[in-house]
Length: 261
Image 1 (tube, rainbow, N blue to C red):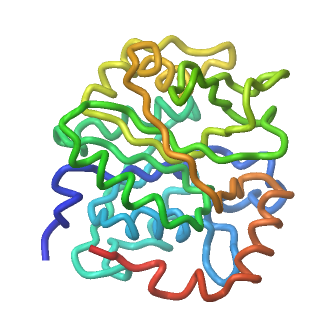
Image 2: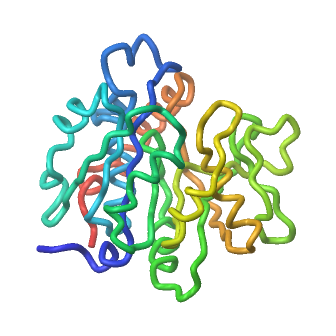
Image 3: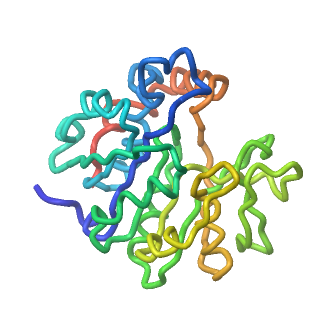
């Protein structure tokens, strides 16, 4: 079995790098994305999102210190369904999400991109239709998935005019909305050209918000509002995600972590 129809048009990119400093001492000797959520490693939930959308060809990007651990856990991809294939790339330094995305240039082979941070857990049935519509569209737009949060100051936040996202503000003191940008992004094939034009931020990283804003300035940034989103990359949200998974076992059965063409 070869690539699914969706994977012929869209490359799946799973970003599992970073040093995990906010989760220490749990991450002293392991990749953050391998910490357990329920009875599975955290990274499985992100993989389940991509597989559930019908993506079988997935690039996994992680840091050099834990690459071996990630490969040991995930393997080639065959445990996740017939035709599933994982490719691995190392991000030598933690230089931001957009920098990690740039490592997918050769892998994408001219396809559009569906990019997911591996500490994001979704329980939302609206993802697949939105990704399929993105793949099928003749319009070359970027797509952000937005979720309502109680305190948006810790996130990238969307500023809307009417129903159009005109700007993403990174961790603003006075958020213009309660709509946080989740860690799931879709980009057209010119994303790498735009990454090449980004300047490092004050912390020396290529910021994903800057990439999103490049599309917003061109009127090419669309959005989908979703529910059931968890950012499990810090201690309290990680524990909250644990509770949700435990309280909704039927939503996270084994089939959730297999390819659904």
